[in-house]
Each structure stands twice: as structure tokens, then as C-alpha cells.
Image 1 (cartoon, one colour):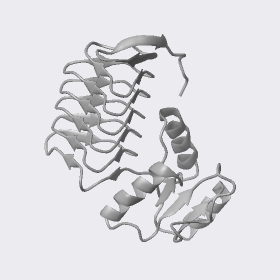
Image 2 (cartoon, rainbow, N blue to C red):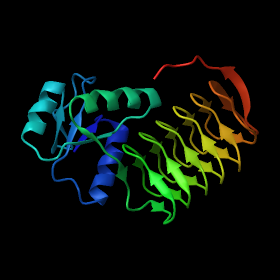
Image 3 (cartoon, one colour):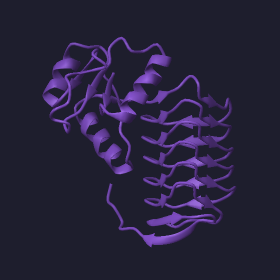
Length: 216
């Protein structure tokens, strides 16, 4: 498997792979940090360009990649780049996350991290990130490339639009809709529906800024 990224969050994704006993053939990819080391933790090779990626996958039966970076639109662009190189977009799901047994759909490329809890009748869209110690209540729909930071609590019957980011320790009350391409600030308590393309902060959450529309 290739983990796209080689810094902070990529190291946490590696830990999930270790929990899964799946670190036999791990590579990292980083074409940004030009002066970084060649091996992460003195063991895992860091690939610097797609030519190196192609060399590796020619010799390997493991064609998977996963995302080891944050940022909804960056994640989206990187998934396109690596899919076009012929790799398979894959999820990393910690065995120490709890996933309900009924009507839970986790799409490809999801990072579900240690300590998080998903109950039943939940959909998690492609490429989304649910970070450490989050909870997601029943009958909730999470769109594509959503970033949910550590300690977020989403109540039941909620809908989170694609490319939205929810900050650390935020809470979303039941039966609410949060639009696409919005940002919920850290510690915010969302008490009413949120439209597309806004920044919401505070307790209770209030719209403080309109955000430009972004094209995926």
C-alpha cells in the first residue's frame, strides 16, 4: 500500500495499518518536502514522484493507495492523481473503531481512526476522514471528502454535505443538515441547519463568513 503523505496524519494512518497487521509492504509519497529523509522511521521508503510510484507497483501485487493528508480538496485532487496512475483507492479502518452491524456503508478511501464510534444506518462517502474519538449517530449521511476532526460528535439523523470540514470537539445536534463546502470551527455547537459555503463558529454556532464556492 502507498500512503499519500509522509508527515503527521500519514503517521497515524501507518499506526492503523500496524493495528491491522498490514505493514509488510508500505510506501509513503511526498513530492512537497524536498529535503526530507528517504526513509520514514528508518524503515519505510518515501517516494518522490509518480515515476517512482510506477516502478514500485510494477514489482508489487499490492496496488492500493490511501490518503495520509487532511484537507477535503487536497484529498480529492490526490485521489484523482493516484487513481489515474492505476492504483486502487482504499480505506483504512482501525480495528479499535466501533462500527455498527446494521446498514453501515463505508465507501472507498475512507480513513476511520482509532476510538471512533459509528452506530447503525450510517453512510460515509468516498474519501472522507473520521479522526480520533469521534461519534456518529444513527441514520446519518456523511458526504464525499468530508473531514471530521478529533473528538467531534454528530448526533442521529444528520446529513453532512461533501467537502465540508468539522473542527476538533465540535458537536452537531440531532436532525440537522450541514451543507457542502462549509467549515464548522473547533468547539462549535451546531444547533440549526447550515447552508453551503459558510464558516460557522461559537456556542451556539453562528455564520460569521461566506466562503467562495470551490470546484471539485
